Length: 246
Image (cartoon, rainbow, N blue to C red):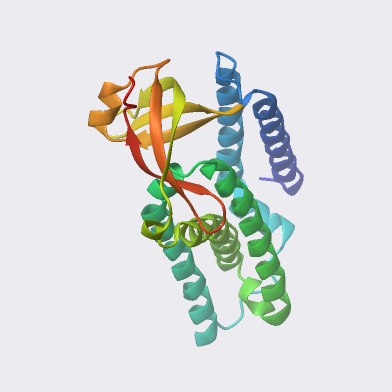
């Protein structure tokens, strides 16, 4: 693939992803049928990000041509595999913390905010590494792995760490219960996860409920969330119940 061609493709995918993001913004808080417009924008963003990932290795070599592989030293392997291990740790954190984050009020905002901060942190670490250990970037495939591990690892790990810091020792906090309107219900394709889409002020947010409680609730009705305010101000839901007056 010619250099100009891969750069044009990358730019086109970025523009399409940006357009998808701009579609999401005005309709993301809509509780009616217009929320499907936001869903369409999300699909556009994800499709073009996947396209970018597919050409990212070629693009990284195009933007940063290798300077010659040279002799691989033991310290190179230690740093390289250390970064890969860090990325795997971020995936483990995601697996352990995602359920709590899903049932955190404004948890989506937390993930987006600190995910972006994580990307910035990853980019800064890449810049620092290029200054203090530039030989790590001489090999094309190794450089790509470093980019991937730092950018995506930090973007995934930071929101999970912040979520864990926020919930702290929730058993020590005061439990508050409030009722919210159920806009609609949903479940995954396997029927293992059951979702409630609730009206939270002007925004709609998704929470995961157990199957028994989910079956007792209905769209247009109300559900009771019992939560504890975390250390960082985000409220973590401890229990989802059917209101006494339902």
